[in-house]
Amino acid sequence: MSETEKKNQSSTHKIGIYLWIWGLLFVLSFFSYLVDWYQFQGLLRWSLILIFMFLKAGLIMAFFMHLFWERYALVNVLLWPMTAIACFIFLMVAEYKYTVFTRLFYFFVGG
Amino acid sequence: MSDPKIDGLELKPGFKGMAEDTGSDQTMFKGVHWGKAMMWIFLLSDTFIFSCFLISYMKGRGSTPVEWPNPSEVFALDAFGVPVPLLLIAIMTFVLITSSGTMALAVKYGYEKNRKMCGWLVLATAIGGLTFVGMQAFEWSKLIHEGVRPWENPFGAAQFGSFFFMITGFHGTHVSIGVIFLFIYAYKVFAGHYDDQKRGWFTSMKGDYVEIEILGLYWHFVDLVWVFIFAFFYLW
Image (cartoon, rainbow over the protein chains, first blue to last red):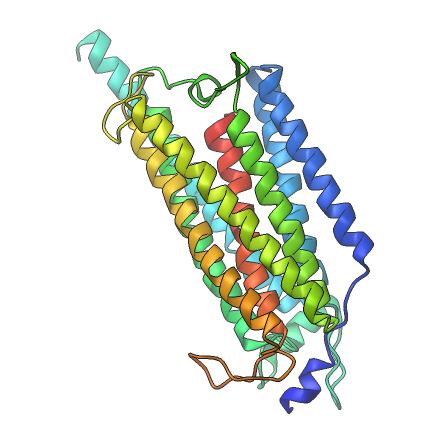
């Protein structure tokens, strides 16, 4: 396939979708700032932070980075490795809990 | 962008299409420019680097019995004599999202061969990025004046400084590199390199507006990483 043919493949999307996503990102960022402003604590704080974070990340990847319109061959190559990161997080959570336990145990109980 | 059309080849959608794309004896990523596929692979590796930083931060913060500094107070800024929590960080977040939006529009106008609009939007993105780096430099110097070092700080656990400088520094480096390339590409768009299919410096590839999309992927990724840093480092 020559390079001139390739050029005609990519279609563009309506400007509205970008402006919508842009606006949503602003609103979501504002909400996550409000989480700190109102000093929510505990489980409510963490769940709100995570929800807004994943929504923002998803919108950016799906629409700004066009993943929503890409073929599954590319999307799956990019998204499945994230399970390895989730696995690593799981392992390190177990690790830090063990570390802080042994530290507190030896600092205060004295071994 | 959207399902590509290749002459004499019918592409199936969904998982069936994925199986056929992957199993075909030609290119695996059908209709995706090789530069774009490579940028995605690079971003995937970069994702792992930033994940390792954030996971080590989680591990460091979780495993110290000393109290962690309260980011809401550490990063507060006095506005008219009143300390506002995370003020600078919030502005930085909005600036970065704005630049991400202008970049998305630049990609759109690039594909529509609208040279002027594309150029101005890439330039606006570059200026947004520069503003972000400037504010980050201000934030760093403020904290350094307050005595935050990689090995100690007056607010709490000593590990705070090393994670802060490492994570935001690495992100800031990415932004700075992005800004340099945005300025270069703004020039290339205005000079008409993509309309004339002028060849690049490092490659014999003919210039094409797909390069703006590749640059856009990098820039959106920088914004994406900031979303995670903002959530885990500043809000948590």
